[in-house]
Length: 160
Image (tube, rainbow, N blue to C red; front, top):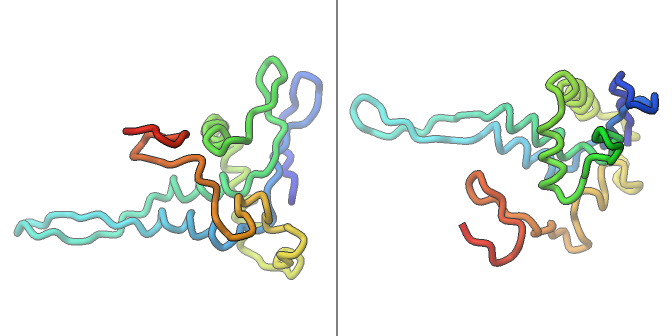
């Protein structure tokens, strides 16, 4: 893990930070990459539908940051720390970040995942994410949240 100091201090004088993984896992990078390969159908002048790659770079960047963040000390005015769990709360809080801070985190996440020193490839110590990635021993992911369009179904039995 790596701590990114944000250069801003809270009311107690402590510097805000975000802690990120030094390397995304394959499935986390793949989930982000999917946003770069989205295809949509476009009708041409003759009425034929053509497949066009329509990358969603904003969703790609958001997914990379969301998968990377493992801790922070960001807080409300009353001093309560922003939630990191469940994942839906973490994502809502990431969306609250000022753009400059989001870009600062994204820049470091990109740097960490671009170069590949051996110490970041050691999966045995959990440096890439390990249990934080939401995987159990069988490799299954947590199914507590299911996205349906723009809405989030958080409990079994919710309908849309």
